[in-house]
Amino acid sequence: MTNRRDLSGPDPDKMVSFEQACKAAGLKLTHQRLEIFRELAQAKDHPAAETLHKRLLERLPTLSLDTVYRTLASLEKHGVICRVDTMESQARFEAEIGQHHHLVCTRCKEISDFQWEAFDLSTLPDELRNWGQLKRRNVTLHGVCRKCLDSG
Image 1: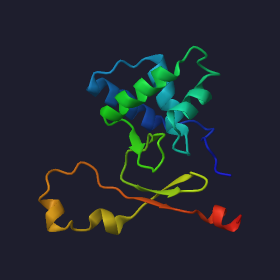
Image 2: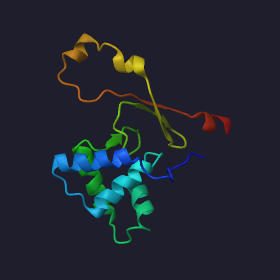
Image 3: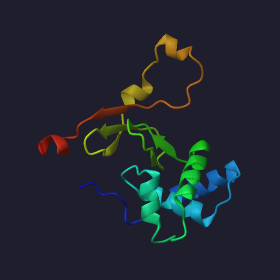
Image 4: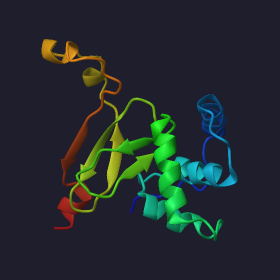
């Protein structure tokens, strides 16, 4: 089973970057916003808002699901976190905003990060280069993971 959370806590540099990004975006650094980001930053499973909410309830018993949704939307809007493209109706999120790609298992729904430097550095076809201004360049691959294939 995949470790869903880094029990050592989020990288301190990531927390400093988060605080700086909030300040630059004009977002108040509220206790709830900080805890939502902290939980997301140490998550390894690209959780949905509902999953984050359940994990945070022990520490923040008055936290509403609506607050988690609004906070994630605001942080995504300001480029502090990313929404992971999946075929699910339920959005999944991550605090890793550096260049990387995703593998999504269509059976167990596990999402794994991977690097693909050749893709990142490849020249875009003319019709894409002339399309306009690209802001992000990433790939999400969908299939069945080895663990699910081996289990039948």
